[in-house]
Image (cartoon, rainbow, N blue to C red; front, side):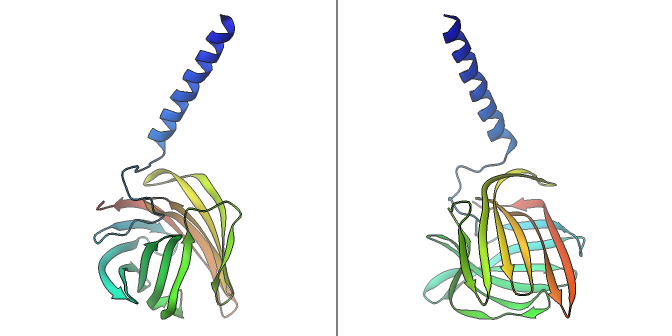
Length: 201
């Protein structure tokens, strides 16, 4: 009898902890299961290290290479550019970048590039091209930022002129990012923390 009571209490405590975990860490179970939700009007505001605020907004769709691609407007006090994304089987793909990004010129890609693999396994690593590599460091890391607490995939992105670490909360988007870009022998560091977001599910 005593053994059954102890087991019952242990199960109850486990259920309470799971319930509290779901309340504490934001999860949108009704949303499409993607690493970064794309819909016209979706927007995210970040506190930046170099700029007081950093804005990301999905502004429209466009047909590219037979796909309906989302155009994402990314801006801050110091820069403004556009990226072309689509969630496909395997994760979030980029079709290219227009404008300046971290002092470098980018363009449209010959074919879509897998940027954030999702779902994935911790330890997975894959090439993005041009000496760039992405590694999934974790699939369930707890992150707290001004916008709240989230369960995230943690990605580590290596490129010839620097690196970045990105925390993506599935169905919500990027919640935290930091990294460094080397320009003419000088390292430029940046950091983004999610302040607020609005999703048109």
